[in-house]
Image 1 (tube, rainbow, N blue to C red):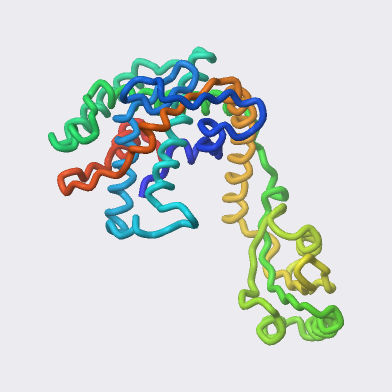
Image 2 (cartoon, rainbow, N blue to C red; image 1 turned 135 degrees about the horizontal axis):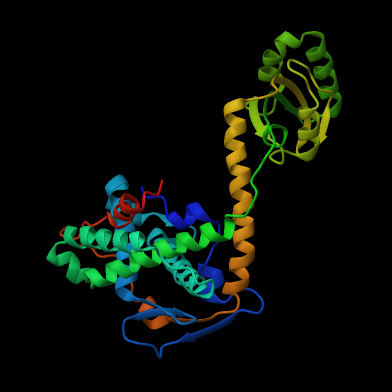
Length: 329
């Protein structure tokens, strides 16, 4: 299953925010007075039906390759999975278009080497399409090239915005600890079990299996990932130490620390925290920019968009080809 470049770059949801007009101060126009194949506009950027179909069909075929066609019979709440797939495609394309406009504002452009990569990627992807697929998607090689260029520009915008963010994170800030945990609903019973645990610390696991309300008794977490009272108590423990009874929102806890520092997990947490800081910096600038744009959605055309069900339409490599030429992990 593909990993969306933009999903990896930043956590911005655009279906509601960019095209449906949720939120104060957003300029949104819903219209049917648009070009025949124009699905939406954001500012001066336009998205056409063939672009939507490339994204949607590649997503469809990737899912079907793993789960089979019956996956689309599943419901997610009141919406079908097909409708959710459409909304995701709309979100991704809206984000790409908005970021190409931001690239213009910031005077960001692709290098000659990147332009050549976009051309080469377009040639490869377009050559992979059979005649049925080309007709069903409604694309030509020049359109595919433009789509790859815009995708690459979106990545460049993100990188420029976050390049000055200092992601230095200390071991202590990213530290992950592992504890055994007993959760109980009655405070007096918890106090009794806590005394037993401190008298026979080596038998903590047996006590947890006997008394804990939770089936899982071993947990690893970093700062900011657990209830505040539990986190404070846990990070104050030394290895093999047992805590006092901790009152939290969902009961009373007793902890035993089994590891005060997991080096591998701490490194993963550093990357997670660094990415969160980059995303925060990006979102701050990006959201301000997007909120200034007028948006138009061709609802009549959008409502006709649906999956292609044709055994000769199996294309699923649009993003794989992009990754191949732009070396995105």
